[in-house]
Length: 323
Image (cartoon, rainbow, N blue to C red; front, side):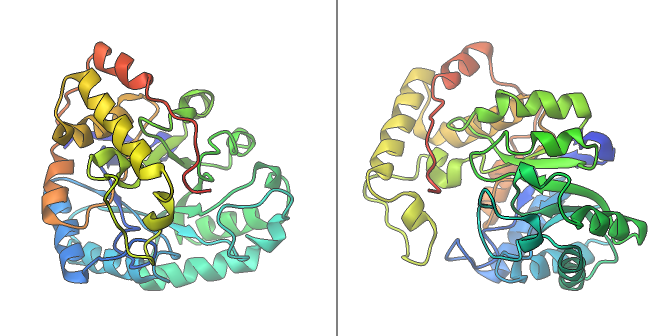
């Protein structure tokens, strides 16, 4: 496992982190707690030391599983990032909504205390807001909450999880100096963070956490026109209409252009998400030991070739499957 510094935090985190949405039993359907625990343990055994979860993942279920594993591995330094859900329950954050409706001071402190109890830890390494609007800079008393929590030792660092496909909707916040990390979607299809966000993060020494490196499964090569999802699974909407066909054809064209098999696309996609120097860690989901082993193996120091990157750049795709 290779490690990178998470920006100004100074934390040395594994290139491959653990995205814990899929084990929370909300949004993603089909997780088995015992299998989830085994997959997370396997990842840790292979060198993973950064886990990203959220109070909103199964109303704390993901946090409780993460806490269970972290406490079991007390001899290892594992860093936990979690997120405060918006008080108004709106994902993503809507323009024009005041921050007093999403992250008022007392609410932020209350939700952080709940996360600490779920995790069973005395401190949270990185507390993040789960949504964001950049016009909230200078509004409300949310920053007072962060400063108080830091002063009490309940959190070490603070970050923002950027709205889906709105990579620039955090640039003002970065400029304030109050933000330690940014979490953003970045993958072969969504390359928008390269336009402005990554440079801004590098300038301010902001740690970058990359989510959805496999496009919610679209870049695994497993989504076909015949794929079906439980109606309770968010992917039933994410891949609705012509989307399965669109992803299927693009991934196959990509494999042909690269001269590789479909089975090699997930590895290439993860290496793409890691290739940019602004990126500190990527957080794919891993609900099985097999996936944990495959994903951990990507951190071997091998980079994509310039020719591979040139080909992948052509597959930038302006769309919002979350809409």
